[in-house]
Length: 595
Image: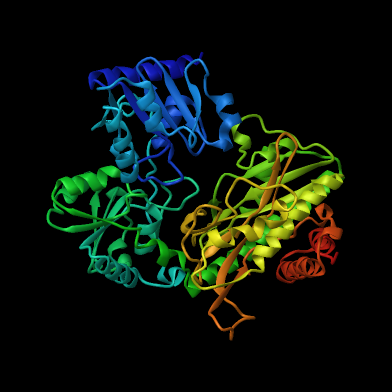
C-alpha cells in the first residue's frame, strides 16, 4: 500500500469530518478549467499519484474511487494503489449517480465550486437531490489545507505580444467583442478562458506548461473596457500603454468583491466552460446570468492574415526541424542504434531548440514504439521508456510553441521491415487523411459533418479509431483550441475561413502497433470552386514534413491518391530543400521521390 497516498486520504477525511461531509469530489481541474494544469494546482495528482490529463477522484469516509477514460485504463493500474482506490470509467459511470448509489439519504457531498462548471453543478445537484443527498460547496479545499510541500506558482512576467505579431490592437479586439456582448443582451462578460483574455489583450505568459498564457480571470464590459484579475507582480513596465485605454489590472484577491458589485447587471458567461463559483457568486450578488458561449472563441479561432502568416512561417521552420530528426532517425536505425522513447523525444526537441523563436513543446511529445503506439495518448514519462525494436512501427506526435505560431504533427515510421497487414492499415489511414484534406464543403458545414471523410476507408474494412479526427489550434496559444473541431458526435460549430485544425486519422491495434498521420490545415475559400453556385470552403495545408512511403501499399491507392501523395511530397521538397544540405538534403530528396 502507498503509505503517502493513504496518509493524504486520511488528511482529506479529517477535513471532511470537520464539515460533516460524507464524500468529497476532486476533479482533474483547477479554477481556470483548462486542459493543462500547473503543478501547484494538480490536486488529483496529490491525492492519487495519477498523472493523466483527465479524470476525477471521489473520497468517501472509508473508501475512494478514481474515474478515468479509455486512454488511461492501463496507466491508472500502474500508478494508483488498488488497495486504496476502485477503478471506474469516467464516462460510463457518472459520478453523481455513483454517489447516489453509494451514499445514504441525507448524506453531504462536498465539492470546490471553483473546480467545476456551472453545468456540472446543476446536473449533479439534480441527480443528488432526487436521492436526498446535499451537494455542499466548501470555502477551503481540504487538499489545499494539507498540501504542505505545494509547488510555487510561476512568477514569470507577462509577455507583451506585439500588435505587429497579433495583427490587431487590443483596443480593436475589445471593442469588437464588447459589441458582441451587448448584442447578446449583456452588460459584462466573464472571460474565464486563459487563452481568450490573453488574445484580447495581446499578452502571453509562462504560467502553464505547454500553454503560453497568464493565470487570471477577466471581466469585459460591453463598451470594451476590461478588468484583468491576476498576479500584479507579473506586470511588465509599459503594460498599460501596450494594452491601450480601458484596461485595469487588479489582484485575483479582489475578484470576489468585483463579482459582488455586479448587482443589477446582466452577466454573460458560459455554463459549460466557466467555473460555477464565478457565476454563483455573481448571481447571489443580484446579477442576472445570461448563458452563452465564450464571445472570444470564434473570433480568436478565425486567424487574421498576420496570424496566418506567422503560422505558415513557423510550420516551415518546424518542418525543417522534424525532417532533420527523421533523417537522423533513419541513419541511426541503419547503423543499428536503436534508442529509447525518451531519447528520441529529446533528440527531436534538440532540433527545434536551434530555432531562436522556439519557446517550448505545445504538448508532451508522444514518442511511442511498437505496442506502446497502440495507446493513442501514450506518455513515455509515465513509466520506463521502451527501446525501439527492429521490424516495428514508431509513432511520434509532437508540436512546438513558437513566437509566431503553434505546430502539431504526427508521423508513423517504419523501423526495419513491416508486415503487409501494417502497410494495409497505414494506407487505409492515409486514404482517409487524403479524403479529408481534399474535401470541398459549403459554408455552414461543421467538422462533425466532415468526420466520416477520414474514417470511410477504415469503416469499409471493419475498423475505426476512438479519438476525434481534428482539433483547433491557436496562434502561439493552445494547441487544442475550441470551438472548432472534427469529430463524430461533437464539434457542431461551422468551420470558417481562417480556422486552423488538425487532420489526424489513426488506427490502433492493442498490444501490436499504432498509426496516426497528422497535418495541420487552415480553412479557406475554395480556389477551384471560386465561382460555384454556393460559397465553398476547402483546406490549405500548413504542415510540410515527409510521410513514410515504406509504409504505403500503392496497390490500395487510386491514381488520384497517388497523385496527391506525390504532389504533397513535391511541395515538401520545394519548401524545405533550401534549408537543408548534405546528407539531410540527400535524405529529403530520397524520401520525397515519387512513388
